[in-house]
Length: 302
DNA sequence: TGGTAATATCTGCCTAGGGG
DNA sequence: CCCCTAGGCAGATATTACCA
Image 1: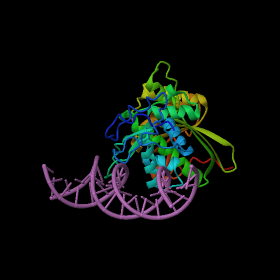
Image 2: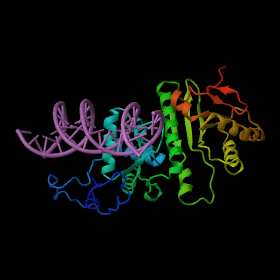
Image 3: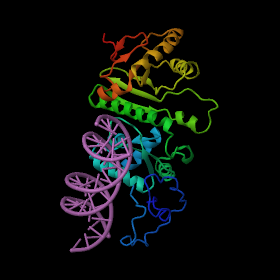
Image 4: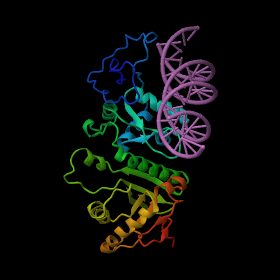
């Protein structure tokens, strides 16, 4: 156990204390000085289980994940209450930090979103061999928060489809380059999808699609066109998840000439609305081709 | 500006099991 | 037997939207 180091840093720790964690290089075993009955609770230690490591790994892959998302993703066999308590323990042990999601979906207190701290990154390096420096830590910029959270929701919707036996063999690979270029080198800026999804419909060959989450900030010539052109060169179909149906109309107009240029059909790139996917699922939402026709995403039956 | 509704989180208490 | 922790439940707290 190595999550117990900075015991004296905070007399009373607040929820957003994440920055001072993980400065321990030699794990000082302070097992002797624990008369915690008198003094107020300091930093709690926790024994990392396999599923905890897995949660840290998902935080690495998705950058930030909300409480309920993390519960569904990593703690499906225990109650939400217990999962949330476990997440708070990981936070209090210093492996993760939390802040408000700032999501305003109706009334009520917004959910927390979690992210890795330095000691969480170190735990990942030790257990999974991921290079410490390449792991993003700290709270995400507000500008990117919604983007990350929507990507997780789409992934969960795909898992639901797998659970319902609509698809099988699901593999969801996030494009980590997305935030790598945010962090340091935006020199080459290789176009990369937010995620690459592989799966198979019943009794058919596995397929692969590229997923792009649009939160409405793409510009046509500067962002969208080079991105879609790069995607089309891969030959894979493209799924675009937008914020609203008017936005679909805009993106369709931008995309259609690119498809003609690449000499592929209007079904190569399809569009759906994020909220509809969350409510009805991947295969319950309406997907539009660039010509405005609808598709259920399923392969053509012969 | 202040009150109410809604929703998530936090704190405290209890219980069940596992090890020493 | 004692101590520790995870899991579960209930009430209090926190944060936000809505409305007069």
